[in-house]
Image (cartoon, rainbow, N blue to C red; front, side):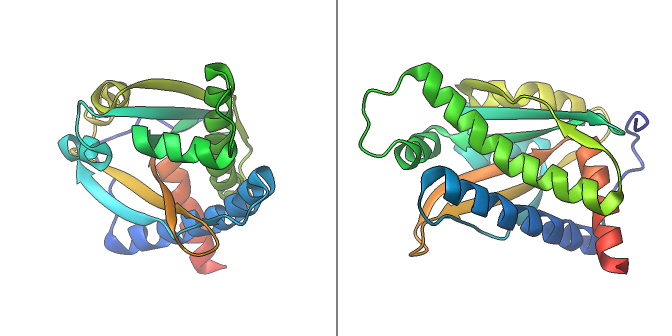
Length: 208
């Protein structure tokens, strides 16, 4: 397991760029899996890396009081941590239209399950890339979904992050159709353990 996060963990601009490349590899794998799931051509953009102050993070979803959907994907193995994916309320609805085209009678349970699975695909692809590059065993656990205001979903993560940093690294992906039309924006927030692994994976990627 990793040690308790400390205040001396930081990322340079070069680290941020390299981690973005790790995210891009994961996105390519996830896009193929999502295309099979939806039976349509799905593209995931290269992630936009953002380093934000803790108070700025909810703005990615429209503010503290904006309705949102969160998918938490814990992992264990050689390292224990988590990855959080966030969708705005509108983004979650667009994702459901893509997953269930023309079907207006989908149960809420099935909707939650489908959104959880898409989050699992994206985060799982990134976890797999990190595992391969770092030669660490990482096993993704079943995703946990929650629908609430953005601030309420983010509170536990931001409270934890606030104990060791004033900033949070986010990866913003855009899910697009084959014509390049953006359908859904997904915000991925790596936990500190995940972020440290992404940094290690990026270093391995750079050195070959």
